[in-house]
Image 1 (cartoon, rainbow, N blue to C red):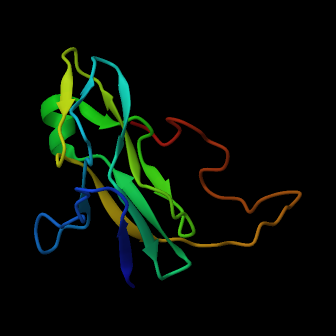
Image 2: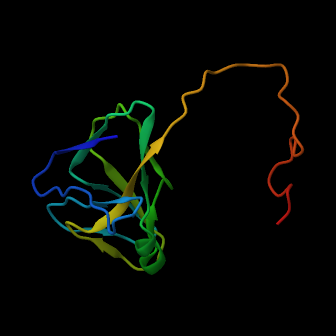
Length: 145
């Protein structure tokens, strides 16, 4: 599988793996000036990149960086970003500051991880009933703590 990037803005950085076997490619902020995320605030941070996978049954996931989250309370406002294989717009990351102090995003700061993931494309069916399972309709907490 190939992943091709288009640099949309001056100063955009191609994503890189922190180590040889890192699953995620680090995405960097592409800013003309620093962006402050106030406590409990959200800011959409551009990367200056568009991407194209050459595999139609795959997607890109944008995930939080654990270091930003654990050390500064900065994570993604939408949990995980899903980038469909046919999307060609700029990759942007909605960051939320869950701490009580402002956080400054600077140009080039590694803000998220990009991961290529296979996607099943099932046929959609309807049925009067679904197959029985041991769990059945048991919901949240039904299997214990």
